[in-house]
Length: 292
Image 1 (cartoon, rainbow, N blue to C red):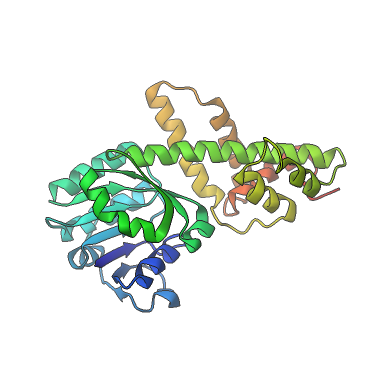
Image 2 (cartoon, rainbow, N blue to C red):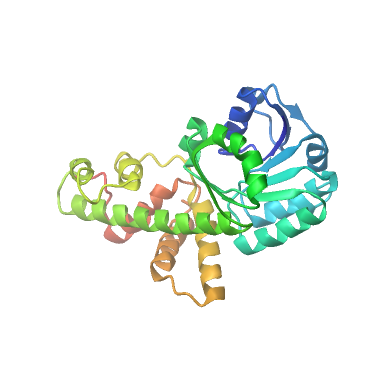
């Protein structure tokens, strides 16, 4: 199959590698140097060229304006679309804008899936991503074999926009869990307990979670190199809060987590992994989790 991939960042690059490893023809567009692992891919001059050449075009971009520019800007993807092609946006962006993007792509004769992911860089490299998909049934079934090359938990949630809505819900849960783990380990450490042993004990009880397992360890070992940057999680919580405002829904804990991330951003930590949210709590306590 001829596949296009636009957005070869921390997540996009390993995702594209899995598609290439499965012997599909890969056509890419990137402003940076193509990774050595994608040496077999064809580099296209414009986003429109990617769309003209490929049957299915994947996007993995930072934010809503980036997706809009790639799709509808100068030499954008939409200029290269025709009947039978599919655009699959795996970025995490606005559910509302996603519905509008889908309509424009459909007007160009192509199909559209929103398929944001969860699992971070680790999941992208291991092809174990959770993929939440919105779009038509037949289009989902057509693209599903490609999703299976990149992820394990693949769910067709509903129509266009529903995938992005699911991802926003996911990011709410993840942010609140990171804050909870940060507070718990900070409490234990400040009280004089060994946070590593506390974490090990909690992993055997009802408080056990993937966040406690992975991000709790990051907090203790101070390994904040980004798998998923605070700046990107801030963007996702912004989508949650703006959507909640539009619907008249209160999300007080989400707002609190967003403010903790803003503290990190104000101190120049927004390019660190989102587990570094704990640094905002530590700042207020004048104590680091790693300390005994």
